[in-house]
Image 1 (cartoon, rainbow, N blue to C red):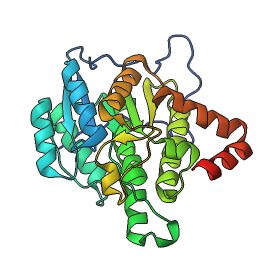
Image 2: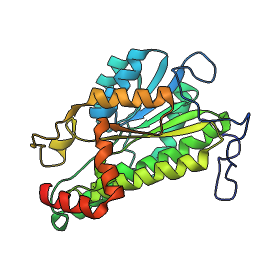
Image 3: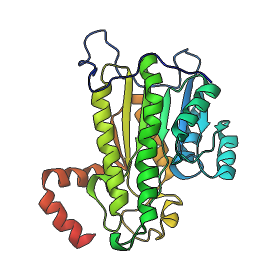
Image 4: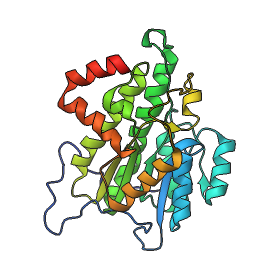
Length: 284
């Protein structure tokens, strides 16, 4: 397969200058690709949870040609059948998986206008008791796999002059959560990656959205080892996050909290970190 892009996107030595009049901006996507006949989207983590909900949301809108990635082949094929999508199962932590998935997506879709990074795993408990293998898995899935896949896809978007990358973060990455030190660290790094990449891509026509949910009602909590039992804040359905992803794509939004009030604790932590830490230590 040959999908060699034009010269690679911006690097440290070739960053684009601030957008000037007539220069390409990171325009919102509306379900229409570069040929005007429908957009092409790649969604990871699509075998369940937020990724599956995003796939169903884009399919319901119409106009999107979808390729879905996940590690659970059976569940992924079920979601793909529901969404009328192509299933591209792969473990993105394997060496070279980013390039192989990029080549497959471009081969099957022709282009990728939208990339939604929905893959994620967690682990709950004291850091001192955390198995080393789980540390590597969380950093590998939640951060490194996404960064490598963005690196593989991005030159094609930059060469085409349009596209959007949506990174699914977590409130844990904005404020830190007790018992989830490594997960919080990985999601915090993803948020910094989103900001830095957005600055670098200004003027290329490629946008970056960071969607930051709180507690979401998905199998994530059961798989992390400890189910979510708190009465507040209440878990929101994955479909609500999918709606936020759709809104971010439609309107070209840089950052979206789900639900929106979660922006408040993040702002309190930024403005008064000492106060926030005292409250967090007391109320968890």
